[in-house]
Image (cartoon, rainbow, N blue to C red; front, side, top):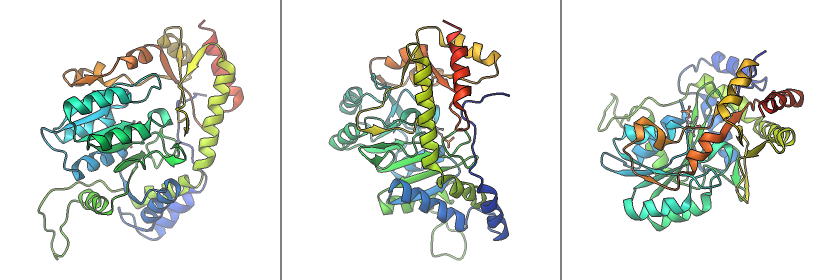
Length: 360
Ligand SMILES: *Cc1c(COP(=O)(O)O)cnc(C)c1O
């Protein structure tokens, strides 16, 4: 039986809700479950407004478009992240400014300040990496000081907090992902949250093809997107939101098992003081070549994955300005994401760790 990195884990209520959605005949990207899903995310994160979307990448794109980020503009973005934090900047033909991480693995505020001074980006997209909060208070202060819009890529960090405030709710926009491998899933899905009612209305308008109100026909002054979530997938989301606390508790328990079993074999991703992560993936640094561990686990049908390859090392990004101390390069050369599915047992984690230790 194969052990996957982070497979979907249904609560058991999804099918009943899907049946309800089908019975209502709202099979479109409108319907009661979309409203309920948005309400559930709002209630949990205490965000003021929420917009359910087909994925989180669309959410980041909408945030940039809504803020008027356009050709020739600069946007600072976490360097140690998944490509989807950055690609929406390219959709807008703006220029990404790559900000490396510090020892916390998260965006380095010092490097960010240098970039804010020298490049004057209009916006900053900060990733809360692997379910852990970034140094978000400091980053928010810097954004304020240099008048840059703060967008939080909280795709991996639903439920994670900094000083009891939810990641995703510090900036003008925040985005959560419900992709198949995330802590919760709707198969594919995303939620954009924000505090500014007007901006969120604009995002909603752009997400539904930018149809001007007040006309019997479809009237267009600008173009939009088809970015909304289906009511059926939102039904899955409503069921998933009900068990978020359980999933976080289990993810954190899995992390504690790895720490117990790998004690002096690995160094784990830190948690910034004052923050509470969801430990979406347990990630660790090893003193040996991580790809050797990766391949050894694969022989046992256990899936692991190298850490995100930093953006500045990607051929796509070789010409973008870069700020920082290249700490992400060291992390990438030593790190691995370990199986973190919430159906794992302690026995399975013990077996995975046994296999890892065979390498040393
Ligand atoms: C998964 C992920 C995304 C994209 O989310 P989708 O819902 O798949 O579009 C963006 N940023 C980060 C950091 C992610 O891990």
